[in-house]
Image: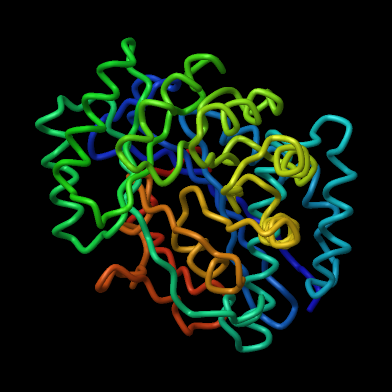
Length: 363
């Protein structure tokens, strides 16, 4: 049960198509950082995180140089204790940011080990509330002309999705509204529609946008402004009149506490790969439960599928273009608008390492 070895692997993976959102500009690749934990009983846990663009080498360095000494010879069963040790080891330079990404990868590997040790899939290990989640297609599509946007959304509907998210944040708000109107006309009244501004707007612009978007039955408005403006989010929710989803850029439970208690958000959106792993994700989910809020997700849907299936206050599961399914053996599949978590021990994510190897960075 003692951890005998800690290894990191760093990959830079090109997207099949360059995409654009309102703040990151053109995105043509992403990085994946994997952590492999080997124990004395010859079990292995796999964890991972990812970045948009850059930062992967720094995350690997944090794990290799700061966290590995904590992990070697530690009892892999003591997940809470290890989490606290990692948090305080990086607290002065971290309190979120890269530190939370590094902790996330390790924590996911520890929970994977626990699942293998106990012979239980992660969703059951964490609570087993359900085995399924309702996914939505999270488009990164601001670069697409309206006709191409509609073709992409039609393909997602044909693929079985019953909920759609699109990007907003063009230079002119009226162009965003025109695109949303066209999408709603395409999908009809029964498909859920979310819009994501990727922090683009000022509070005043977000309020004006929300008021106009209400006409198109928008299920939520995501990241309308910068995540640091808690009071601004409260104003947008109150004066704009749409439910707000926020969280992919919040990297500590304390940030979620402020946003939930004071920001009037309706859908907390923790990302297991950047919030500090499964341990901290579940803390956020339970805090949201205490405030009668449903939890949604960001990216890495093959992991979040387990987490939403584990909790009673689950909302929608995001599936977007940064997916790793082409490198995963037997990835989750969509069937009649639903995804079902696997019954394999741990998180069940088995990478095709040979397919990933061509994108490896460093030794």
